[in-house]
Length: 161
Image 1 (cartoon, rainbow, N blue to C red):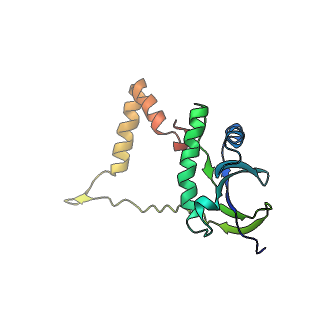
Image 2: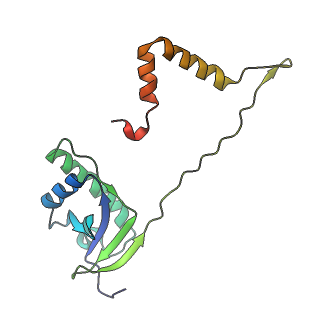
Image 3: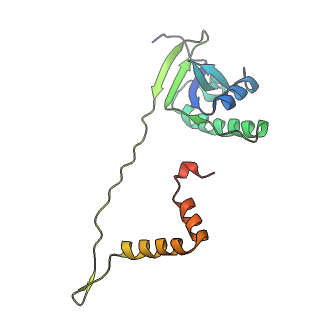
């Protein structure tokens, strides 16, 4: 890596292409802005705001991105929030990347264990999952409102707007 000092931190961002383009025009050449970078777009933070140490830059970027998303929503009510990627790059005055930080993405692990079935006086009780699920589905089959509600609840969270 070059020994040139970092003058701007760039955090690549993701979002709707038209929203990114509009903000790149609206917030160009600012200490906090959205710029074209490496074939995409990035949130730019000047070192006068973020400092020379990379450690606090990610949390500052999250705070500033919330404000940038607010600006986007004011400019266009149909605006969709932008998201930071896992990279953080320090750029020198000539526009060269002189510092790179990669964030590890978290993972989700789900573990399911069996359900213990109780026995009272030697008589096994019904599995509570089947009792609840059957009652809910039977109710939905007899009521269109219950069916619609169940369909909404069953959607993937990313579909809920």
